[in-house]
Image (tube, rainbow, N blue to C red):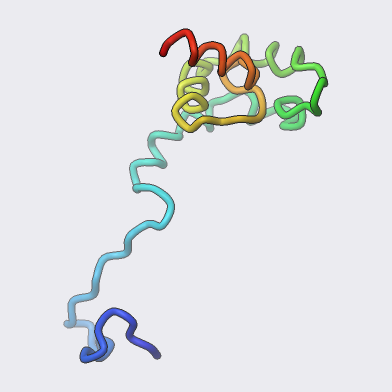
Length: 105
């Protein structure tokens, strides 16, 4: 095995040796709780293609689902914070989210 962290140190050979903690590569561990709203989203129970229509395609079906969703606000907040450029998020299309951002700024 290769030790890329320290050329002089050998890898631990017994359980008493302290091992460095594992660091997540994609976000903090708190991201799981922050994204728990996705499990309650109505879109998770429907056809995902409706939320990512072809250019010029209808967004009506997706927006109808969003209307009755209990986590619509969290979804929109996530899309705005992460600059989602495709799909229907929080009941708004990418164009509608862009307009909303311009009004806020």
